[in-house]
Each structure stands twice: as C-alpha cells, then as structure tokens.
Length: 110
Image (tube, rainbow, N blue to C red; front, side, top):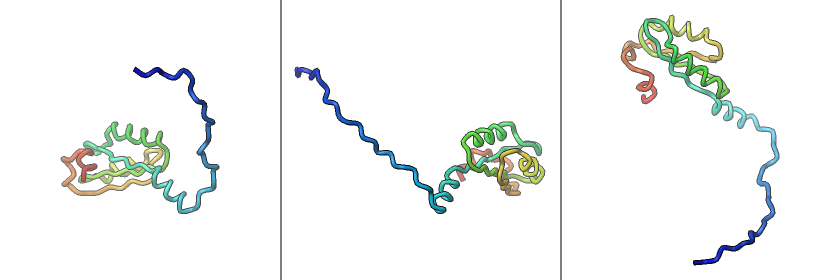
C-alpha cells in the first residue's frame, strides 16, 4: 500500500465572514416574515386543548410573531379565549362545521 505522509501542509486560515451591514427595509420585512409562526390550535367542548398551549410556548421560543388558527363550529368563545393567551399577535378562526371532526394535522395538509 501507499505510505502515509507524516507532515501535513499548513494552510493559512482565511475568513469569509462579511462585515455586518444594516438591512434595508425590504430585507427587514422579509426577515420578519421568516421569523413568524402559525399555531394551529385544537379545541374540544369549547375549550382550548393543553397541546395547543404547548405549541404556542414552542413558537415563543423560536421568536417572532405568532398567529393562531382555529377552525370548527361555535368557536367564537374559543377564539376569544385564544386571544387572551400571552404572545399571540393574531387569532384567525373559521366558523364551519366541516372542521369539527378534523384534527390539526389534517388541517395542515389542506
């Protein structure tokens, strides 16, 4: 076989880091959109599920704005409850009985 070389050639380390420049307004808006989260909240019997609150907590750890989405029939009270949760910027709800038997994973597939 081949003999391994005992000496390794040392190369100078160069940095390819850019100096920080201020972001233009368009880049700042794009960055804010990237740092946002959508939390699909589940409910049962007119109350938010605990798993929904866990999802909001996880989104808060990511940073950025958090929008909540709730779907089902007679959910205005659930949407009002969600609006009181600390950290949510917006709550979007769809009042439609079609979503009553659908879980959050199915809604995300839509």
